[in-house]
Image 1 (cartoon, rainbow, N blue to C red):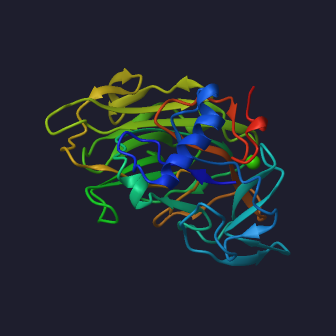
Image 2 (cartoon, rainbow, N blue to C red):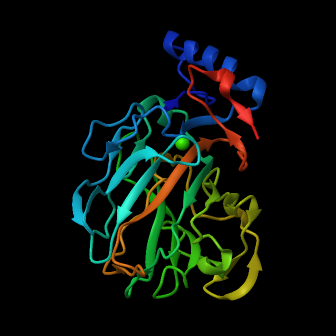
Length: 318
Ligand SMILES: [Ca+2]
């Protein structure tokens, strides 16, 4: 079940918004969830949904959709089915020789009211399960995209910049490194270890958290770029694989002027391989799975679960 609410500093004073305040206060304030602006656990969406179906509530857009029959089975690029970390999960199905672009995921453009909250500091938490053998030939671009976030100066305007969370730096996904970068700032920052070395291509759920904070104003170098894997902050090298190991980037100049805010996000996704191709060990279907996605103005951590908004009694902390 999706929900989102306007709870920022500049929220409208409309009656609808005030009702939302009441609900959010009831559901979350007492549990420390006041900072959450969006979440999805896929559990209120009927199992069997695929990307050719009507958009689920709360999701304003989706990527390209298609289907293939391969190894005797038909799958859509994106399906929501049971067997998730909690209830249902989003599964993006791929196979050798098949579709390697963005597709099958759900996209979240901020509404005008949400954009007018002027978010510049957001935490994204979600779980990904890479099946054993998930791999690709990343070709010359050396990129397997995992997430992208857009910023803009006006509601619905052209993106000012794109912030990426990718795997880059090697011909293979397994030999690549997690990267964080922003098109405005220009640097690409590589994780200390390879994806394989972090042990996440093991068919189990792993918790990913990214924290992006834009500069708070023109000439103010107070941006933040961080990745946490299963709750542990990942170290990055600032200049490719040279230079010091940094535990994320704090009070860092991302080059943003005043008046730029988050406008769109889509972390539960994988993106195009550019000229790359899938390189799975067997010629059958592979699904990368996503679940328990939360966007918040505060760090979430790995263990908080959210139920549907009409059932706050089910909110729990593991
Ligand atoms: Ca779920």
